[in-house]
Length: 117
Image (tube, rainbow, N blue to C red):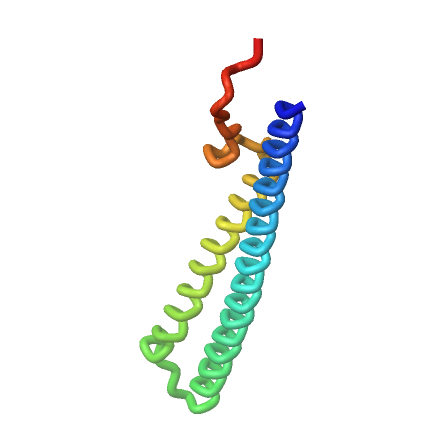
């Protein structure tokens, strides 16, 4: 009967560990998606600002491409961040879909009792 109690305790610990891991993954996924959304908004704003600058330059007949380099570089940086966040989200989703692998922490707890038999 004590063996059943030990097995139940081990199963409970494994289940709790699994739930904690899933909760952590979901929180990380939500955090990454929030970052992605904000970065996409920043990129859109940078593109709008860049477009407005181009229009003003054309209206004033003073278009100089070198004056736009900082805005273009900013858009490129946001695009790079978006690609990185998208990759991280895909990897996290792939890890969630993969079959559960045993963590060393989830290994059965060794007992002081001799093995049955």
